[in-house]
Every structure is written in C-alpha cells, then in structure tokens.
Length: 496
View 1 (spheres, one colour):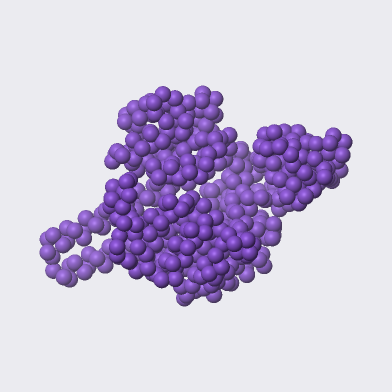
View 2 (cartoon, rainbow, N blue to C red; view 1 turned 45 degrees about the vertical axis):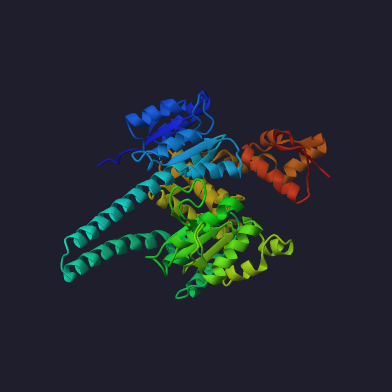
C-alpha cells in the first residue's frame, strides 16, 4: 500500500519566494497548497486541514504570521497542526514570541532546499509520533477510567494496569532502539573513547557535561546516556539560548494560574516535566548570570517553587548539559558561575569534531544513506574521497545534510560527484585548476594583486556558494590572516 503524501500549506506573500518553496516541496512529491495572505490561509485550513504549515511572519492586510498562528492555536480542531515560521533574520525576542504562540521552528530566508525538506520531514515525523502517542495515552486513560467507574475487582484492575504497562514498555523499547549508542556511528579511537566513557556511566545518575562543536551529536549522546538507564522516564530537552531573564523562571519551574497577566492556567515547568528522568540543557554556555543563579539553586536543593506559588516542590532530576563554548574562559571572564560549572561537570565528555575522526566519515556516509531509506545506493569512491577531505564547519549535521542532498539529486544506483552540493563538488575542480593551491592561498594571491575582496568576489574566485566562502573568510579573519572592514553585505577583507 502506497504511503499517503503529506499536505503542506505554504503562506508567503512574495510571489517568487512562494513559487520557489512550492517547487522544492513538489520535487519531493508533497501535496502543496500555496496562499499569499492570512485570510486566504485561514479559509484554506477551514476547508481542509493540512498536515503542516509554512507561515511567513510578514504578510499583507490585517493579519500577520503571528496573528494567524494565534488564531490557529486557539482552535481545538487546528491547534495540533505544526507551524514553521519563515522569515528573514530576526531577533531572539521575536523567535521567543513565535514559540510562545505555538510555532515549533523557523526557516530563514533565503531558503536552502535541503534545509526546507529536512525541517519539514523532521516535524512531520514528530507530529505523527506525537499524535500516535497521544492516541495511545488517551486509550490508556479511557481504559483506566472505565475500570475505576465500573468498580471491577482488584484482580481485574491489576491485570488491566499490567496490560497498559506492557504497551508503555513497547514504546520505551522503541525509544531505546532509536536513541541508543548504536546511533553514535564510528570506529575511530576518538569515538571509541567516548563510547567507553558512556558505558562507565551505566548504573549511575551522575550529572554530565558534554563539550563539543556544533553539530557533533551532543544531544544524540545525551539521549543515549539517558535511555541506557531510564528508558521509561522522561527525557526533556531545552535550548538555553532561548531563555531570557523574564521567561526563564516560569519555563524552568512552572507557574500557577493567574501568576501573571497571560497565565490563564497553571503550567508545569521543565524540572517538573523531567521529574524522575533527565533534563537536557543544550547551549548551557548561553545562559545569563541571573538565570544561572536560578538554575544553581534548583540543582543544589532538588526543590523548585512555581511562579505565583508559596509551596516548594521536590524534584529528582538528572542534569545533562551541553555547550560549544569554552566554559573555562567564560568563568575567567566572570560570565559563567564556577559553582554551577562544578555542579554540572561531575562527569565531562568531549565529543570529537568530524575533523578529529575523518576515518569515520565513510562509515557515517553509509549509515546516513541507510537511515534515509536508500540502502541499495552505492557511494562512488571519488565522493568518499571528497567527503573525507572536506572541512565540515557543521560537523555531523552538515555531513547528513550533504548526504540527503546527494540522495535527492541522484538519478541512478550510485551517488556521484555531480550529486553533491556545488561547494563540495567544486573543491576538486578548484584545486586542480590552481595547481594544488588551497582556498586560503588562492584568496591571498588574489589580494596581493587586487588589494581587497568581498563575499561575492570570493564566491566567483572559489566557484563555491556564499555560505562556504563566508565561512572561509571569517576563519581567515579570526586567525588574523585577513583584516575585515565594514558590516554585512558591505564588508570586505584585505591583508594586514
């Protein structure tokens, strides 16, 4: 039986942007319903509910994206539909507003096809899983309520509860399989050392601090640590960079009804949601000192107090924190509390970057191809060689995106160089044409002749995309090889 394709509503007032994103989704055989303003969007949703909505924040007429999302989430029939906001660069406060209204993610303009497809796919899967679990929970709750109302014998009630417990165990086992250490792929010395340390954590409930660059798999490792011990207890992840001083207390510890103007009902905080299990604090290095103080007290005392309440609540929560920041430097600068650091760093794991484990890249490539449902696809040797030599600024996350792009582009039974994103495919071409010169050498040679270079000129010089050349120029500037003048699109670089 053929799997039903998801229905996606796209709300975008710019005709070119709308057509571009519609074309991206159609190539993946989704059912796409384009609209250009909030009123049309609401009418389309009322006529037939979509599976997911891509919603531009800035829309014409009286309804912007925030208002449309607010209306959706206030309607019981529509509130379950995932909403991904699309917009240009926006502030953290604006993102927080979108999440507070019920949005689940953001896609920034200009669009990257692989990013759009990846985010849509992930949130469709999450939505399906959530609805399945909610339905299972509803079924279990109805069963227990019915048994209580009918006042059946204790033995019958016990059997029903045991049956329900078996169903929960099945769900838990699936989670263990999904998030176990077998997902942390690799045979390099660096990876094996991490795996050995994780095994040492078995049987403990110690707080763990995971250090590593962005995209190295810190959250995957945190989930593996949790599920090897507490497969039936909650794992609650949170991105600390979204916390502001004003919302942190209510988010961490919850609030009572009427605690503040918008508190229309009581709300459990993250600590209480994670009670008995694990609270994963990602990007812990981005917390302000005020929020660090709130967090420290909760970890030290094992007690929280919801906003508006006069009663403390005991919680038993394991903390796993992660960051790509250098917390030692932050402590030296007075930006991170040392007492909080030592509460979190009872056991420290360093996750290696992809450049530290290049021998794992072929194994990971095969793993991602299989994970994306294309086990029969063969990877060309030239592709493997290019992937092993490429400088991954996004680490594992970037490698997976590259593989997904290649699978989408591949028309045959083998992934070739032509299927890779341009900035990788051009790496070998550029090197050959410049007699083996590195990108840095090519840029420096250009500057010696022309004096300065901007992102657009560098793109033409390296024959790569803007994201890649921007990364190369920033890296050279950070290493003090180049001097930067101007900001954003008006910036250019020169030799010191």
